[in-house]
Length: 195
Image (tube, rainbow, N blue to C red; front, top):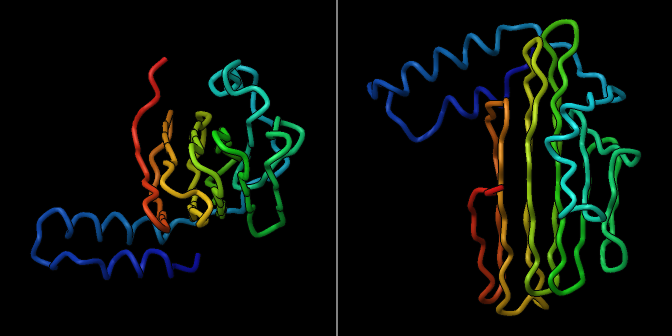
């Protein structure tokens, strides 16, 4: 398996003598030597896994990605004021309505052996009060390496509004890179969902 991501992380800001960084480098080196097969994009999550993210409060606002791929059949996307463009290399979601809500669900499903997937999501919020719930769920089984790139951009029309970004992870440990850009006085808040 090619290791550019692991090489980039290994450079990091820490010095080689930092105890925790030494062990992180060893773990990344061991991970880079594993043979991961591409994850199946057509796999369907079991009902017990779907129950973790099919909340009545987000019905009509849900976008589901399975092993890094957008799955329209499992999604219940927002209506007017929301544009979705998706392809093999990622997805762009533009929320144009004030107070828009998007529940983005990432489902990791294992294969027969260790699998890998990569996802890219760009969210463009162009109105104040945008709310984003980002949820990661995983089924038990073989190892899954998911690499996720997330870009959040606030357009000028968002003005002094806020983007509320809530992230929840269940059953998975992730290494993730996120870029957040804001214009004017817009702000990003993170927290945890309480049910």
